[in-house]
Image 1 (cartoon, helix red, strand yellow):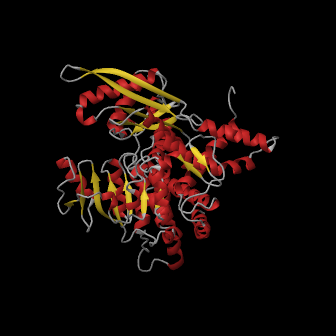
Image 2 (cartoon, rainbow, N blue to C red; image 1 turned 90 degrees about the vertical axis):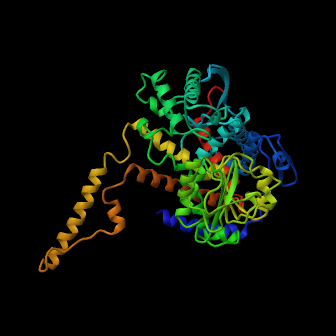
Amino acid sequence: MLRVLAKNVSKEVAKGLGAARPATAKFCRSSSSSTGTEGEDHVTLRSEVEDDPNFFKMVEDYFDRGAALAEDRLVETMKGRMTPDEKRVKVQGILKLMKPCNHVISINFPIMRDDGTYEMIQAYRAQHSQHRTPCKGGIRYSMDVDESEVKALAALMTFKCAVVDVPFGGGKGGVKINPRNYSDRELEKITRRFCIELAKKGFIGPGIDVPAPDMGTSEREMGWMADTYGSTLGYQDINAHACITGKPITQGGIHGRTSATGRGIYHGIENFVNEASYMSAIGTTPGFGDKTFVIQGFGNVGLHSMRYLHRFGARCIGVMEWDGSIYNPNGIDPKELEDYKLANGTIMGFPGSEEYKEDMMLIETDILVPCAGEKAITAKNAPHIKAKIIAEGANGPTTPAADKILIDRNILVIPDLFINAGGVTVSYFEWLKNLNHVSYGRLTFKYERDSNTFLLESVQESLERKFGRHGGRIPIVPSEKFQARISGATEKDIVNSGLAYTMERSARQIMRTAMKYNLGLDLRTAAYVNSLEKIFNTYNEAGLTFT
């Protein structure tokens, strides 16, 4: 069924791309925002002009692009005994309430350092939307954390969850520290105290707000938070450990979560790189064969993105990190680089590579995967980028001004709210596992193995009844692929299959929307349209409380 859908979508996409006007989308109407200036048939967003816009304003402006396109269709499809003007007022009202952040908390608390001195720690948590609950979003430890950043990232999480049909609202949190400057004991103190403060204010809980790892945090910090919540506010709640995802397996985590974002990035690229119509539009051939890629940021997301792209035939020629960049035109092996970094604390000096002293963002490559911070691609470097595909592994790596330049230059940008949604998708699977209190596959594993064994025995007996046993029993040898699956699906198999299906289905939805609105290569606007239509329908059908 899915293959038939993919073929039909491919034909529609090819037709849509062929007829699409080049580059940017034209908007007939601005949504209820004062950030844009309206011409005859095009809205110029303020952040398209600014070279370093406010991050939250960036997200709002991307939302405005989608809202400007979707408004008329939402009015047309709205049911009820209302006049067209009344429908438009309601549509504009719901779109308006979808934009701002519902709740933001700023927290300050002291810790005692290992040397006996005291330090005040500043932290934030934002809940953008409760159209679905709980809210969902990571916790990062970074000196760049501020209120605007967590609001922007929480808003992105709302739209990201909707794009991949994960029933969560958006949230995000952060602690304004550089984790390299603190001992493990100090980090545990900070993490546990932050969790207590969130719990006291109702900003964490299995049905309220469920954090996850982000920049500067890992399963270790998530384990500390789950233990803290379960030992305090959640001590009588059997579902307490569902308050956090991205935990260690021993604390209720799920197999495949650590690599989920990187694996999702691979699947996101795969769905577009194998689409002949899109590859033809940017002047390249389908498939990963002979394609090169560059990774910005060799943390969890960058490492696993590199690993899967390498495994399926692409060649990594460069890696950028905070302390320098390395280059090897013959390819860099991800496992060897990971081992080298673990042993030396840096990628610099990796055997077989050379230091790249220029800006590696501008190197000639097929695929560029920015997996570091936001606003890495701006109006300054966008005109000089030579990659044909940009896969936004980080959140908000491209400013609106740069996005417009890239589309004008016929570069395919696969947007963050789709392509890095692998993490939240598998977090959803982990959350369900914690609520169900049983691992995936446990109830069916032996049954499937026995069923497959009986199937082979049945085939063998049927053949022997037909042809006899003159030369002994007829051997039935399973194929290599069947042998690998004969024992049934493990939890990791189920997680990886669910992630691949989610990314494929969401990619097809984006392709259809891009074709329907004649957007050409503007996948970001197509993804936002998909997202806000789903959120709009949730609000519209649920109704509004106390208005």
